[in-house]
Image (cartoon, one colour):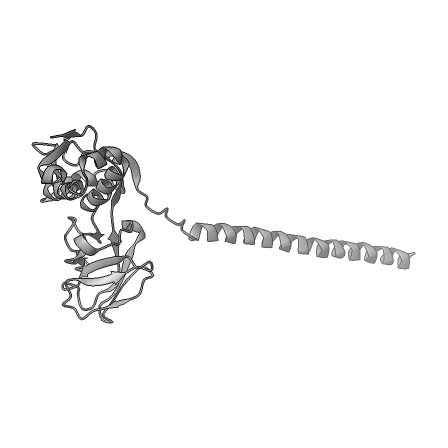
Length: 261
């Protein structure tokens, strides 16, 4: 009997041990799950969310000459050997990164003259009958020519439109206003600059080499659009990127009530 009781006790002890051993892996597995969950949460906390790209906002109505003493445009047309002219008060619908930018640009020296000049150069191409029969085409060409005035190419952190970026010293080259075709969005475009290596690259375009005295260095993007850059103030040790492009766009140019004289 004693032998049987001992066997029973051993069986109970073995069963208890087996239960303990059986519970062990469950506890370890639970710990691993908790550890993995904690690690995943920490990993998610450690990875910063990607900042949303800056986008232009609008539409915004903007009258480019409203602050002038005479907000109307008086522009010559080719009728009767350029002796006739039209008058209208221009308005635009714009999109911009900063809604305050168009008014700030309007206040810069030379803006009104440049805007009127751009409008006049366009109207001189159209006879009066063409203006009224192809008004959409006329307004579209006005939009393109005036957009280059209201939203010119800007470089980096320049305080005013045509000033140099304070970090790199880069600013628009001499031919940018007349020959430059690049019109990329400012916060979506950048110049990759390697002053020691004497190269400047616009986005994924080919790298342009320079010597350091160029006031009109042409750089192209991957589509062949040209940007003219003055590199004379570039620090000899500068290596980095510089934002470049336009800070807004004219979506529509409105001539309104056109009167012919």
